[in-house]
Image (tube, rainbow, N blue to C red):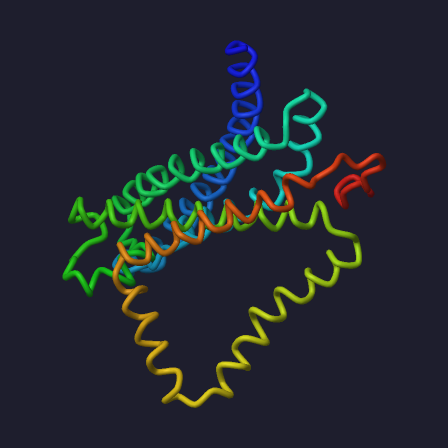
Length: 258
């Protein structure tokens, strides 16, 4: 029984992790190539220029979210065909995304540190919190760098689990509901919510704005909040995950339809 449990865990987890790390490796290679070209151009035009470099952090965050959205369907069919239960599939996905988030955060820091040797690069974390903590350089303080790594892990994990929840949810709901949510979610976030905030008096929003600022501008508070969101999305994912069923005639993806 123990051998069977070990093989069940080792197989899906190793498969998920290998796929993720290969994709992350391609992403980092693209980032390195782009950074090398940009640094060469900037140094040629103005060697003393101070460049603002936030591409690594943003790319990692978007990568984790998109990978979380895309990983459910294929991995679910593969694991179910191997006789693995939904609970183990769900836990393996959560664990593999957690490992991915923990691994790519320090890799991103090392990449930032490497490119900082050749340019006056400033990271997004330094731009937000450097002046607040009286830090003169993105890499001059080890505790400051560790705060950035922990925040990057929490943000990547929250985005990955949010993507997994959406991917699993879109898998189990009907087609018309998928289309409705695909339209409603971005419109609500980028049009509805800002419009609603503009209608609310500034005096009413001020306490809420002060509360948000008290969390956002304190790294450890923001890290904890993101971890809470990650846990919430992880728990919510189980609701559609335990109801997921194999599609007898799954629709081909857009990439295969041409």
